[in-house]
Image: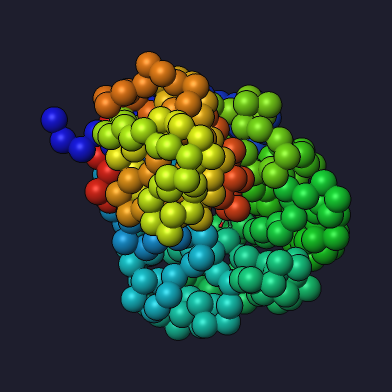
Length: 356
Ligand SMILES: *Cc1c(COP(=O)(O)O)cnc(C)c1O
């Protein structure tokens, strides 16, 4: 047997979460957002889990082409657009839908000779100030696109910075968007996962769930379970070493944890080179043999240590869940000062994947 770490991907959980989103937004079409290799779950695995998704959304041109070449016929939307005239031509060839957010891409559409018209999402900046034309320019941008034979359908798009924050919400960007969109008569897409749950008024024509599809929460203070979501990813390993400490004995690099009395600890085959967050402190939850215990000391490249004081039966070979079905990724992320999104995306290439 090889090093015992593995990541389990539960296709049925992804399908369940997709249906949950469909039930919340029954009148909208759903882009399964699968950038970053399907938030670490594997692009092809995600596509296979929801073969009936209304569309897929990515940011990586090459992976979008690869997805098209697996036979996916639904719209594939490039959320960050294309990065060169060549890619605009490629988008045309492979029937990829392109978010256009700046002048340069407009000029490509106006000047290239393309094999077929490209469906366009006009990305409007409503206050996040990342990508997009100022919302107020929507009319002028749409007029240019409508005059352009390289352009197929046109959809308006924006992205919210604080849909997950009940204090700030979406009122201001939404007003800006609706003012800009008024009278244009175009389909639109606004909602990420957080907005799908909390703001049904922005479901509109298409919604764009990412994190919810994978069964983690977009909210700081609401669990995935409370949203009716099921974790699709479980990171599992085993205890590969056991040590007995006396008062004053320390664990791992920098001797960052010191025992105050006799205790047993377990060493687990999982470290930051597997994608476990190095900044997770002592106290971060870990499930050992189905029982919740705590991380001790520094996470190293290939190993981490846990407290076995209350787990006398735990030994070499005892199974461990770092996050997953029984230990929400959001709790681990929270303990490590990050979000579930980052942990999912960071699972390393060396971790074998098993699809359920
Ligand atoms: C990543 C992304 C999403 C999905 O966001 P979640 O919070 O994961 O639901 C939606 N829209 C755009 C433009 C994105 O980049």
